[in-house]
Image (cartoon, rainbow, N blue to C red; front, side, top):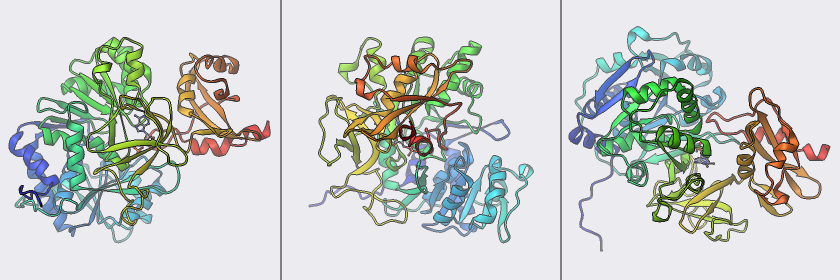
Length: 543
Ligand code: AMP
């Protein structure tokens, strides 16, 4: 027997109409390309998104069409976020930090109908224009600030503001199946071509609900939230939806994300919660320490995307009274999967145990599930020690990549393998110990490269560290430590290896240390271990 509740579909447009109707005067603030501040409200976002639908219709966009964006966090980008799915098209955010060949590949693979571009990416569009199939490029600016762009034959260029000025907003948001595709984001994997993750209205709604919960982002009508995490990657962790759903103010920082710019916007816009990757917070910390500036309104900083360095948690808490919270996720998870908020047992933990616990990636969000398995697929215990492949399942987790058969990314029981290796403790807190491709398999046993890297960077002379598996004639693989010295320091191999004493089993110790001037990173700031592996894989063979 079916329930008898109203069959209202979960539409992204209804997140926006809720914000406009019930939180209409809440602010949306953006730093523009010209470094001015643009202010309007959720009521304006809703009206302008309807107007943008009219523009999209004039440009020939229809249901199911992909609408690409190459843009920073700003109000025009937000309007595309809502207008495209609202009219049953798909908002396809493209990461401009990828290699231009990958960007061209992604644009063609998604078969974009229109491409919306921020002024700062005009040179990028000129560079890839001969290789891309999209015909209409809309520059997200007014006619006075249109940049020079060389297009390929058959392409047209338009000004966003000019198109908007010429359109009306006489449009009513339609209702349709909540499983309809709403947004597309390609993973910037460290191997192979990027793969598309195709979200739906339903998955976006459920994810927005879950990230707004008190033990996650705790978004409220009184919150002022600044996502540093880009709208061009992983949906800015769902914040553009969660703030509209809960009626808070949304502050969009544009392209200047250095420490000084961040401190200025956080204070000027009275931000209470801000979210981004550790690199941004380390930059902010450096700036605050160097200038003596304070953060006046920020209560919490959410960090994710890569492991939280302990320094971040300690320094912001002890020097600035700001709580750093740690979350984990991936493009395939919409993206948030776990969040580290304390249970009763963790309340009042003394330091350094408190920090140690906060370094864990956290508890699963309600609605989705996780497990860890060994090499044979057997589930491992939640004892905080056993580590294995992390698998997840749930309604905002990808079942297949764009263009593939439904369910093709899942195992036979419907679980998605994250590619991360993790422990789970008895309280359900997950901790990443490695990427499955990066774990070192020595004599049949696993060694966590991340554990070894974290210890290496606690050495006073080491700025950054990578541990990779190098082929070994006896043990199959052995860990090799690659380090970048801090400016003005030299690294003594024996002293770095001595720091492992008592912290890990003897057989985990790297067999050698190589000092490098720098380490390679992916477009999203993660260590590019594939290139290190191809360079150093035979290190122990040569020795
Ligand atoms: P992406 O899809 O580009 O966001 O990358 C997702 C991957 O980033 C995950 O599978 C993890 O390997 C890594 N990642 C994300 N958040 C964290 C975190 N808090 N700690 C460690 N690794 C993380």
